[in-house]
Image 1 (cartoon, rainbow, N blue to C red):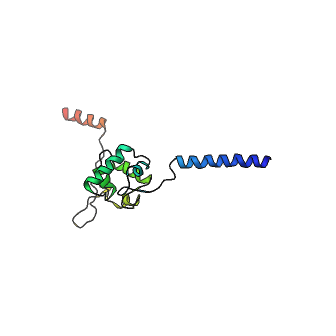
Image 2 (cartoon, rainbow, N blue to C red):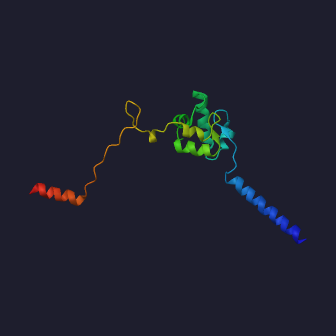
Amino acid sequence: MLLKYIQSIFQIVMAGFLGLFILTGYVHAKVEVNSADQTALESVRGLGPSKAKAILQERQKNGPFKSPTDLHSRVKGIGEKTVERLMQNGLTINSKGMATKASEPSSKRSVAKDKEGQPKAAVEKTPKQSRKSKEEKKSKEAS
């Protein structure tokens, strides 16, 4: 009798953990941005009805999205970080998840290159002058 009671409590606790696991977003289905309907897009955590509608309208007007950059540049209100977060939550573009983002060149990380394609040497910076030394320089110039 006590064993049955413990088993039923254990099952309830395990069901609770499973429900919590599902509700926190760890389990999500892949949703392809170029073929999903309004309901499927809204199922992605972080995409509400207005953004899903904006994606559908833009896709209908100008064709399928080619990359994460294409998505955030064409849909107003969706930035780079939002696209990254949506892709982590199951949104895919051309059946590619987060790997698509890494393969694109990033303007923030671009390195200036010379004519041969080699990275340019960094310009040496002079050390900053302290306020005290600037004041001393001014007083010397004034006298």
